[in-house]
Length: 58
Image 1: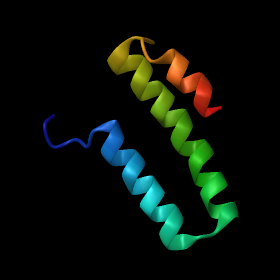
Image 2: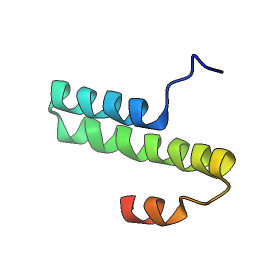
Image 3: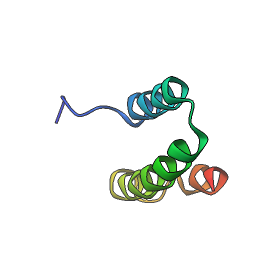
């Protein structure tokens, strides 16, 4: 599991995609999809300990 990217690395990749594309519609569609996955990852890995951070993202 050491090869899997950290949540921070994944967020950085998303941000680079956004700045590279610079297309608001693309980013919004992708971000909502990504946040759903990201929330599930946080729930499974951290057992909702980061729930306050997730609420700020919405």
